[in-house]
Length: 395
Image 1 (cartoon, rainbow, N blue to C red):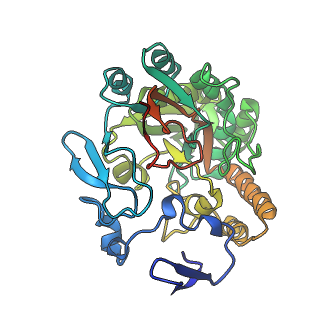
Image 2 (image 1 turned 60 degrees about the vertical axis):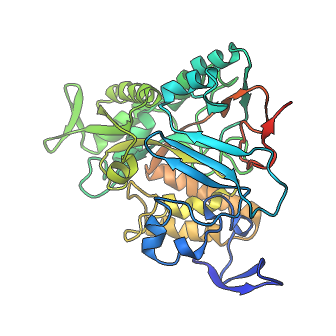
């Protein structure tokens, strides 16, 4: 929206005409995903933007609206929106429940849920073997990754150290361990911007090369003293912070073994979900952090938010890593109206992100959902959007 020069009324009150002051490569996705339209009541000033939707939802233009919210029970109920002007929804209500990840499949089996994402081969097998349930799958739009903290004073402030550590992590082993049996041929995600199967996806990653990692750490003055490298009296030991979940811990244990092989120590630091971003990730209370990013059908729009570095406006660059040169390349990418040229520039951005040791994509979610077999038009969306008016149960 910082590229929009003005907004004018169109043919009626339901049409607006945007005029951009400079080219924007992702103009087709201006109102997609996280850039969806919001009313002025929650965007008019910083306070309403930050807190206007915390306790209650305001106006909605969708086929459903919030009927009730129960924080104690972790439950949100949606009801039909009487102001909806499109095709009437087939469902009367939709209920979202917050459950511990280990309890979701059992809740599906016990008719407490109709659909839940699946995160392991054990969960997939359990659903496949349960009467009345089935697995629906399309390549998922979420991906797991490792973000490094490059803030001044951090143990990983030196880009050379971050890159060396990146080369020491066997991402193929992680993908194989976590996705064997879920997908036919598990592969790590080798791009920060595009997902596997998406136009523009290329492998721009740094190779897994622990021997090179050792040489580079030696050259940077980090010398082995016993099991861990030391420089100027400081031990090369990092804290890997993550939500307390068995999948994250399994990934961390693989990384921990990889780094031990090159003389880097790693402490596994698990945290509860409540306040994980506001109290831990956003303030930078980590050396490395594991969390999930969401891909998009319009991937260029989020590049500056995560990979641009603007010290007074960090947005999603929690590791505080970047450069004016990369910012300029990002600007060129977002200003390119030729779609193929924009893809080329985006891949240049991706390679630069790898080379500065900003973060390390691990693997793309396989996209498996456990679903009640008679639930129609709902399951694994991939990069598509659900049509909530079409969701229902087969008679």
